[in-house]
Amino acid sequence: MPLLAVVAKAKSPLLGATLREVMPAFLERGWTVVTRPDAAEVWRAAGLSSDALEVDPQLGAEGPAPDLGLVLGGDGTLLAAARFVGVRGVPLLGINLGSLGFLTAHPADRASAMVQAWFAGDLRPEPRSLLHVRMTRGDRLLVEREVLNDAVISKGAIARMLTCAMTIDGCSAATLKADGVIVSTPTGSTAYALSAGGPILHPSLAATCVVPISPHSLTLRPTVVPSHMTIVLELQDADGAHLTLDGQWEHPLLPGDRVEVGPSPRVLTLLQHPDLRFYRLLQQKLHWSTR
Image (cartoon, one colour):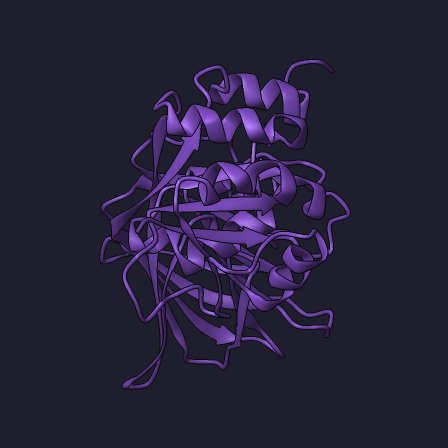
């Protein structure tokens, strides 16, 4: 029996109607659906049968991987889906119930058509690279996770810069004095890294982008490095600094902590309509080249 993971923005006023529109295509084919408790409440309020519904905050992390992840929300919802099911090799189909929807590119009014296109085999699988992040304090490993967008080191509420030593591919590269630093995938180049002045990278590139946030030295510029290289950031001085992964998860940092960011052997797969090519998305979502 095939398994569908539904990762949803439960607060969206569009969620109930979207569930009623797209779920019959799965339920009539005998699929089981797993979702988180907040989305399950909307499911029941929408009048859908709970016979084939499983409720699990971890979206079946202890069992077999779902056959498909259906993301109903915005880009933050898709990042959550990537963390729960995408890193397990589950392809993700994103329906935009949010505002921007750069990753969840298919509009809500086309939700049913996109589901039918997936059943017909008409959607294009688009592989996206991931970063493997490790944070150590002395000889203790405190964090080990995969990210789709970025790993960010940033300072706390006190208005002081942080200082960290950066090593790239085993070579001492710079001492960063800045409000922080972003290490992003090509997918993440259109997120926080872009607002900090980083370049736009095509998602198929084998590259990693390092973007200082408000650097003290004007010679510290965004840098693109080959994706096989490991970037090490060692915090030297900061008050209340923290590490944030994909904007979804945060851990406090202390001087001496090391953050290693390198390539992940895993690949995340987005399912896209053939008409939604990257540069068309730039034009539609970011109004690229229009002003």
